[in-house]
Length: 112
Length: 116
Image (cartoon, rainbow over all chains, first blue to last red; front, side, top):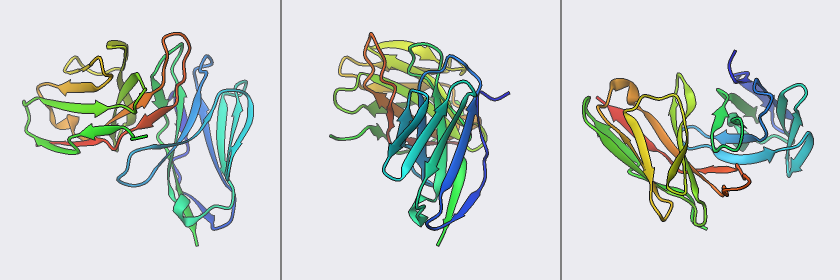
């Protein structure tokens, strides 16, 4: 079992729709969870961090965390063609660590 | 604030050679983590440096090493290069303190290494 799992996609949504990206993780002691966006040929860009169960909203983005189910998701409202990218879920390793474990990423395509 | 910088941006080496990559973190950030990104394996953690000490290490052979200087700048070195070392090498800086933890990591543009 992979430590962090994401559906590779591609996930295709029409412009203006809500895109829902999901991620599961295996280490129950993980404390920090992140979503990165990576455009082709570029480096990952941090878009959301979440540390507690529940929802966290930032503009058009909402991150949701459920530690009991070991599940974290990212919702993108009013999706735009510029949101087309690969979205990487990252989970902190056990303990006080600067190690992030990444999923393989989900490719999102927003069609005009 | 200036972001994370990495040099060089592109590098071509031959098998058996060694290479040194450099990373300058965001001002005030004391933690630098290094990652390797390949199409097949995705993003994989190499190691983390904080206060000039390696704090964590990923599952890579000893050919991969690094260090951190007193100004938090970091270098990683790969010796005896193999074809499979061709990858995008990314460093990320973080405002990690010695007591607690703030794990938000910000990536540099990466160094694209090609081994021929």
